[in-house]
Length: 556
Image 1 (cartoon, rainbow, N blue to C red):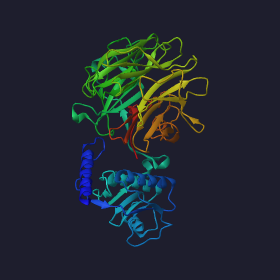
Image 2: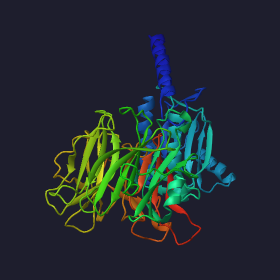
Image 3: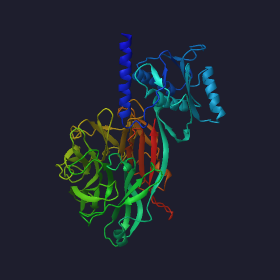
Image 4: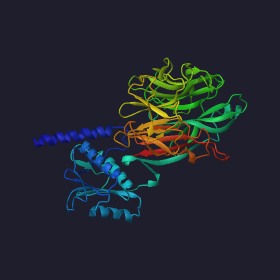
């Protein structure tokens, strides 16, 4: 029987190892040597005076070890358990144990005043930082590097090494409750290029750039040319006047980064050809098809935007690119209506795995029964689109929902944010949820307002759900009015807290009406990285060509 149980364990080990080798998005390959440390007889010892965040992360570590190894380790505080030579312990925080003190000495010897150490021997595992925040990071690193790759059983994998010493860089970290962290890895600017694509057009109609708006961003993940995957594509509208053209023009700029956002170059300017009398696109959105739609393969980039002359006509047009954003074809107009007071605006595209449709949500002013409403159309081929379906269309004409943005959360629900003018102060942000993109319930139900205590968000929202952070992932919402903060939820939108804005737009330029207007968020393919782009002002400095600000954020 013992031999049989051993055989089962060995088979289970190799099954799990094979699954890990085949998994996508983990960010690192499984260890090759699989040096194991049996922790079945270990006790978790936590510093008696540790913070709430360290305590919370210690509980999560216990749960994580149980989920991965099947071991339910006891958690005690050092004040209650005397140090016994040879005792097998996982020491968390600045405990009174000699092993912890020796580990901290190693940090001091390396002149690391803001950092952490993970020190592993056969009898103890020390997880400690120079601060509670650093200790929290050390716990997370321990989970990722030692526990998450271990086979089912009573051991952890120590192939990452018996000692890890790292700096913490606390100045770049934004803290949320429960020890959740947003670490800013990159901040850069996207500039107006000196050499402009579509040169013939811009020689004919020189642009006087006045600023940028409606930035959007995506990470390429489904490109047929594997070398393109991982590149970042940003798109935004240049608010400009065109010399020699009677109507005000808005030019689109497509920018690419091949180094994770450290640097950018403008690679294209999509042109308006369906209705050349209209401007070249405003209210931009960029989307990469994750699956084939009609004759468009997975990896096709779709740029949806408004083509508009505010005096009489607005279109929601779509451009597509089959070469990672370098060339664009305007191929369809999804909706068309009147000018400023009767138009269609602010498209947002998303594909539904559940029904195989491509959806385009947008704001609609053309219904005389509503000042504005949010609707969608959908398509199986990206060319032929359904009639519009109301999503939020409140019976009181004075209520004006608009600017829809959607993210899919880990619980299977789609989360829709939108602004809502009404008979209240400001333009608060509301949300609705559904598990079926085609069915949002009663359109007369405008959902739930996002609030934190007495604080609310106002105007031009964006949202993203990312798996990292809490057990329920991290849901983030930005808005125009909250330049100092963004809102975060760790329970799928039931409750909210304010955290520091990683990209506070007031720091980048002098303020005007479009600064911070309609930011863009995208979740990286690793499930831990957040890409954040925001519009900034065209400054009075003639040498400054910055049009948008970008931040790359890792969530722990």
